[in-house]
Image (cartoon, rainbow, N blue to C red; front, side, top):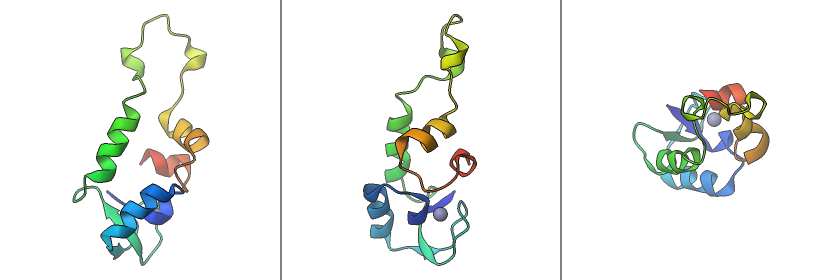
Length: 94
Ligand SMILES: [Zn+2]
């Protein structure tokens, strides 16, 4: 998957992508001639996101009596609360 520095608001993530100096077209936000990050080639961002996501519990692993009103979709939490991404929650899901 390809994303780009413009997909993010977070300066640290943007810096990681810019340091790679790889220019191309973004498959996530569809901007052209931007600094891109290919998740098939790089592992820095992937590992960071795996660590970040590990603080959440998948629905299937929650106890049966967990209140349904407290469930949230990760794409919505990451869009509304993290302030990391500069793209829609649907694009974050991808
Ligand atoms: Zn992008």
